[in-house]
Length: 427
Image (cartoon, rainbow, N blue to C red; front, top):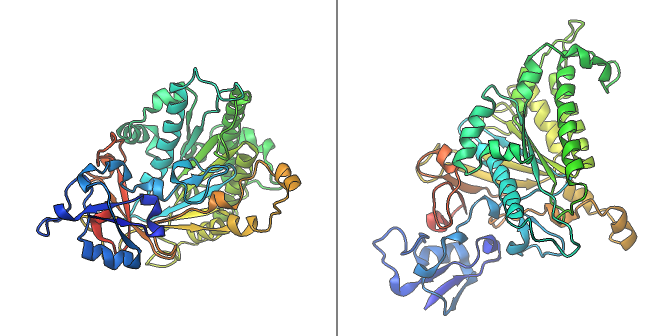
């Protein structure tokens, strides 16, 4: 006899089975690749949702049902139901803005790498099927990822991390599916900044910070334009973005910006950074792109220390009013543990409330066919309520290896997630 978990909030994990005949109470984990808690412990978590049925023994379970970030950060495709896991995609919808915040004790680089791996996997699938055309006789459009490096680490560090994820950025760059823009150099380096002063879009703005932001904006615009020219004859896949812009990270970009304008007056760097990001998201919307922004929240009101930096607090306040999804990564209140490295909470923000006011008529749908509907942003989490955070664990050999790509059935390179209160049984 086996026990099947049919609780609705565990749908992203699929069906998890326990073969009672093989249960050994002296073992921490059940036999097979997936460790599970005792049935009694599970019944406390799942409550009345346990059902008895004849199912496969646990040692026949594939390891691919182990929950990872795809169970949190995936989006429906057109015509798919909200619980259709097989028809969801990790590629963000077009025109969406995903805000990722982290802390010093819980860095969220692994979330950004999640989107890099997603675009790589999508493009790899298309390359393997280049000879096959869709029903209209057109190949599907690729997904290009534009990475704005705002720290001093540069592309060398990113290449090392991506290589451990099974993504070779040199190959991606040669194929036109990846572009690294050194945003830190554009902000710090003075040569050439004055030449772009005439192209400033904001009237009367003479701050050096804005000139650096304008240079970054222009580079992104050129990359989006080249990507659009190369794929204008290709078909799009559902609501998924054709381009993903990753800002790594916005806090460092704001800190590096000049807080004094050309007339030696203080400049509101937080406001300038927010305006630049708003212009960037508008540019992304015009080019079927999405934006993923990383921001450090240690000095903001959402941290345990409270707001201590006015620039960071200004940025967070602005982003929470404009982003579509907020992925909040925080450390455990009790500190870093061996089996749990922090918690993740996914907050749907502005877009769902605005999308509810859109009409559903055929004419309106045709007019706004490029805007994904409400369900595209209905990010489902395996928690009973979205108010509860999901715990996560990075691979035992450290964050760098956890960011790495793993073969099917391997735990190496996975960022594993599970609902609070269920124990390590869902790892």
